Length: 149
Image 1 (spheres, rainbow, N blue to C red):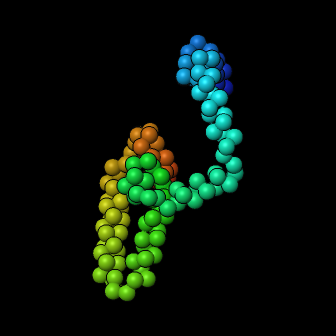
Image 2: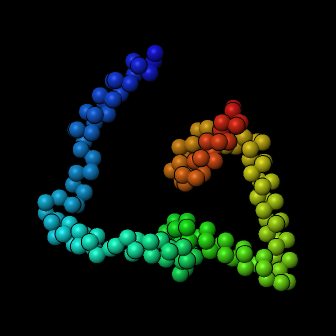
Image 3: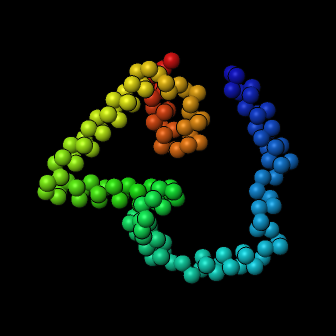
């Protein structure tokens, strides 16, 4: 009932705000930037589907892992550490290094378990976690559903 009462006024307020504020106007691609638009269209015409797939392939293997972290190239970072893990596991004489990573994994799991038990992750942190990282938002949402306050 409450939703039926509030939906129409809120929808009207949203439409009014969009028409008054006109978000996206003046973004630099107006009539004065026809040369920039034409140049972008030429670049799009040059790229083929094959180039798009090759770009994805190039992003799988980053040239610089730190740069991939900075650019939020998740595909490059994950593939790098996946290859590094496989390389460490098949290399003879790396049992000690594997044990160190195993200990670090157990310590991280213990830390997460403590955070969940102490409830340092309230539902109010959903908006903060969404702004930081969308995957962290889903983790927070799941934890909030599983552990109500």
